[in-house]
Image 1: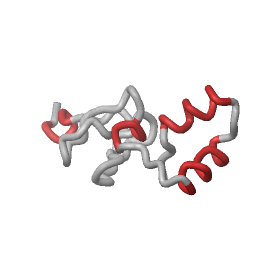
Image 2: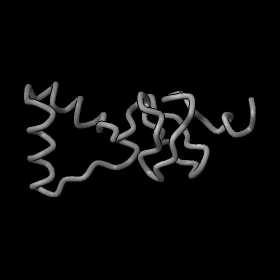
Image 3: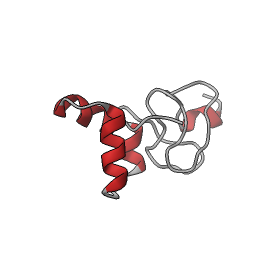
Image 4: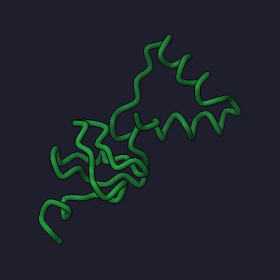
Length: 81
């Protein structure tokens, strides 16, 4: 499972551990969007067309599609470019 990039950034900024922040947000029912989870450098998913390809893991945080080339997958991967 890929980490939420927004929560990682928030945990660092707030000086708390990632796991504590996730636990607190789950308890408060705070849910990040797939775009926030994927990170600022996310790419567009070739399957669903959203900018939700996790910037490091290469998995779409919206539809779950897994890229074979990592976090830099984009529509061009399926188009053969």
